Figure 1 (cartoon, rainbow, N blue to C red):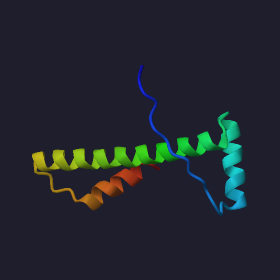
Figure 2 (figure 1 turned 90 degrees about the horizontal axis):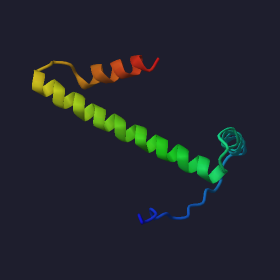
Figure 3 (figure 1 turned 180 degrees about the horizontal axis):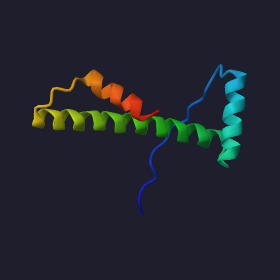
Length: 84
Protein backbone atom coordinates (compact mmCIF):
# COMPACT_ATOMS: atom_id res chain seq x y z
CA UNK A 1 0.00 0.00 0.00
CA UNK A 2 1.51 3.41 -0.97
CA UNK A 3 2.38 5.77 1.86
CA UNK A 4 0.46 8.98 2.23
CA UNK A 5 2.59 12.04 1.49
CA UNK A 6 3.76 13.79 4.62
CA UNK A 7 2.15 17.10 5.42
CA UNK A 8 2.63 19.88 7.92
CA UNK A 9 0.24 22.26 9.61
CA UNK A 10 0.47 25.88 8.57
CA UNK A 11 -1.51 28.82 9.88
CA UNK A 12 -2.17 32.14 8.20
CA UNK A 13 -2.20 35.35 10.19
CA UNK A 14 -3.31 38.87 9.35
CA UNK A 15 -5.35 37.81 6.32
CA UNK A 16 -7.26 40.88 5.09
CA UNK A 17 -11.02 40.50 5.47
CA UNK A 18 -11.71 41.03 1.77
CA UNK A 19 -9.19 38.33 0.83
CA UNK A 20 -10.72 35.98 3.39
CA UNK A 21 -14.18 36.57 1.89
CA UNK A 22 -12.88 35.93 -1.63
CA UNK A 23 -11.21 32.69 -0.51
CA UNK A 24 -14.39 31.63 1.28
CA UNK A 25 -16.47 32.30 -1.85
CA UNK A 26 -13.98 30.49 -4.09
CA UNK A 27 -13.86 27.48 -1.77
CA UNK A 28 -17.65 27.28 -1.84
CA UNK A 29 -17.73 27.48 -5.64
CA UNK A 30 -15.31 24.56 -5.85
CA UNK A 31 -16.99 22.64 -3.02
CA UNK A 32 -13.78 22.60 -1.00
CA UNK A 33 -12.94 23.57 2.54
CA UNK A 34 -11.04 26.83 2.84
CA UNK A 35 -7.95 24.84 3.78
CA UNK A 36 -8.23 22.58 0.74
CA UNK A 37 -8.85 25.57 -1.53
CA UNK A 38 -5.76 27.37 -0.25
CA UNK A 39 -3.61 24.24 -0.61
CA UNK A 40 -4.98 23.71 -4.14
CA UNK A 41 -4.24 27.31 -5.12
CA UNK A 42 -0.70 27.14 -3.74
CA UNK A 43 -0.07 23.86 -5.53
CA UNK A 44 -1.37 25.22 -8.84
CA UNK A 45 0.79 28.35 -8.53
CA UNK A 46 3.93 26.36 -7.84
CA UNK A 47 3.16 23.92 -10.68
CA UNK A 48 2.73 26.83 -13.12
CA UNK A 49 6.06 28.32 -12.05
CA UNK A 50 7.81 24.97 -12.45
CA UNK A 51 6.16 24.45 -15.84
CA UNK A 52 7.32 27.91 -16.93
CA UNK A 53 10.88 27.19 -15.79
CA UNK A 54 10.89 23.89 -17.72
CA UNK A 55 9.48 25.63 -20.80
CA UNK A 56 12.11 28.37 -20.64
CA UNK A 57 14.85 25.75 -20.33
CA UNK A 58 13.44 23.79 -23.29
CA UNK A 59 13.26 26.97 -25.35
CA UNK A 60 16.84 27.87 -24.42
CA UNK A 61 18.03 24.37 -25.33
CA UNK A 62 16.19 24.45 -28.65
CA UNK A 63 17.42 27.95 -29.37
CA UNK A 64 21.05 27.00 -28.73
CA UNK A 65 20.76 23.87 -30.85
CA UNK A 66 19.40 25.88 -33.79
CA UNK A 67 21.68 28.90 -33.37
CA UNK A 68 18.72 31.27 -33.09
CA UNK A 69 19.48 34.86 -32.23
CA UNK A 70 16.26 35.44 -30.26
CA UNK A 71 16.83 37.14 -26.90
CA UNK A 72 15.27 36.04 -23.62
CA UNK A 73 13.40 39.37 -23.56
CA UNK A 74 11.84 38.59 -26.96
CA UNK A 75 10.75 35.17 -25.73
CA UNK A 76 9.26 36.68 -22.56
CA UNK A 77 7.40 39.31 -24.62
CA UNK A 78 6.01 36.57 -26.90
CA UNK A 79 4.80 34.60 -23.87
CA UNK A 80 3.05 37.66 -22.45
CA UNK A 81 1.46 38.40 -25.82
CA UNK A 82 0.28 34.79 -26.09
CA UNK A 83 -1.52 35.06 -22.73
CA UNK A 84 -3.68 37.98 -23.90
